[in-house]
Image (cartoon, rainbow, N blue to C red; front, side):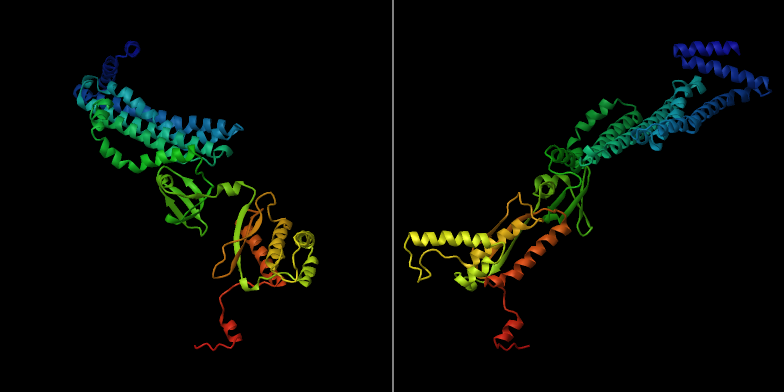
Length: 443
């Protein structure tokens, strides 16, 4: 036995697995014969016994890795304060590592079981199968490691709005593509470079097959590099029915959760080739814009009488404005010797102008309006439906529900205060209006 061990040690040191196999086989054969097994049968089953022994050792090593080493690593990881190692050394990553132990041992030791067939096609095929399995498990290990790294960075504040999932999928596609090339080259017993050279002739077909993935990858880089889109942005793309928050950016799709809780998926390259509206600038600014107008009946616009001006002076938001404007008007008319007996002569205040000043001061007095951003009330082009009086301001609160409440409160007040200025809102006559003027409606 000592001679066998010495022979095996020397052969292993020199990398001569065939000599190791011969020494082991001779010892197994001698042991079987000494145990009373016929020499003919001993020659037939010694290979099988060694093979089963190798498989048993490989399975035992795999069991030790999974039941002992992995548990020790898991306990050590739990004792650390860091959270990244809990994700990186998770179950999927470590299990894939342990799965490589058995096939590696079998790949190395299987020639020992068949020393007389060291150059046979069958042994070569078995070793190639082991190698393919090792590569497949290694690919799964790297993929699981990529996923773990993605989870670590996606939980960090500075990376939460980055399209990391798209980059992860791109890396996994490249990884499995390279792995597939290597596996196929092993199966056909050719160099990977020979296979890649052959694939070069099929580049057009590959471009067609992976068109969406390639375009999605390039578009994802452009979206990220130009800071055009990130997870959490509110975007609108009416052409594709998207109006909501971006919840995921992947290699092939951008998922948008609309405000009715439906999901719209858009290929990333469409966001580059087509136009979309990103509301993130509004969310990061100091306010959300309100731009809404009310149509004033033009027949209700008139010059202010002294009685009307006296009434307006009692409105706290208008007191200073009315007095200052009236002083300027009187000075102008006096300086230019205006005949005040005719209203069209000189300058006069109108109820619409005073109302516009009131609305401006009213908006300036509201704490819900951002006073550092544009705030104005302006007239638009008169139409057949009256004079549009537009309120343009920014609400301090950008949340949708609060924003709608703010502008609703403003226009509730506007509609209620209009009659105080002798103005009327223009609207098409309703059935009640027609009944009031005595028009009979036929049903």
